[in-house]
Amino acid sequence: SADLTIGVLVPKNQDVAVVMGHLNRLKVPASEESGNPLSDSAAIQLIISLLQLLDHPGDTASWFHLLHSEAAATLLTGFSEQDRLVAQRAFPKDKQPIWERLIAWAETTKSELMTAGLGETMARWASLLKPHVGPRDRKRLKQATAAAYQYDSPAPMRTAELGRFLQDLKQIDRTQDRVRVMNIHQSKGLEFDIVVLTGLESLMSANMAQALVSYQPDL
Image 1 (cartoon, helix red, strand yellow):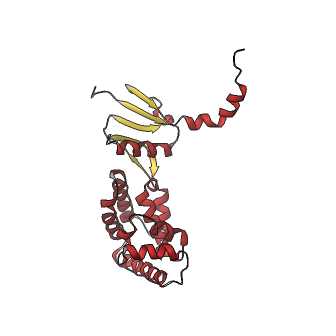
Image 2: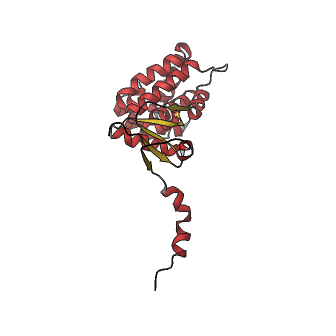
Image 3: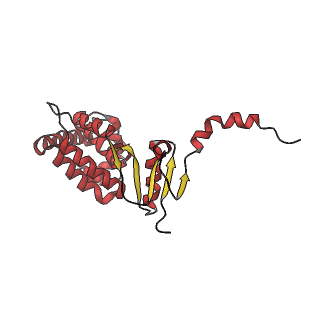
């Protein structure tokens, strides 16, 4: 029936993001009830790496993430797909000409951010990424943009600090959809016509070996 309510319950908050990802791919509208960090989105993780690079252009882990992302060509304005492949092969030899260009790009991008502001820059990055991500990532990009406009940056501005802020910032995405996804603890006192329990294997795995050892077959 179209009127039945469905509660999908998981053991941990991070499992909520996994379930929501599956439901989104199946085009099943659902309400995300648990507060999850914005960084549960691949698009936001990419932006966090970019923010880290603007403060620390020599951060090889962040460069690796950016260069191996399918959306890298979108964010790395002025670089071709061939440039990205050359940089991947040269990684992490920062004395290669391509790396000198990348470091210069990071410095120029930070200068542009300082002029335009965090909110405007985040909005531009979100606009560039939106065509390449799904609905949930687009929602996270919108939330990150709003957070960037409201972020009270200390002086001097440190973009990596905004990255850490986004890493920890949690959002609750409640909607009026009949399917509601939450952790088991949050479901206390709530009623649903149908309850689906998933992810319980993670709770069982710790005691599984002991249970098998204790098993006594009938003789």
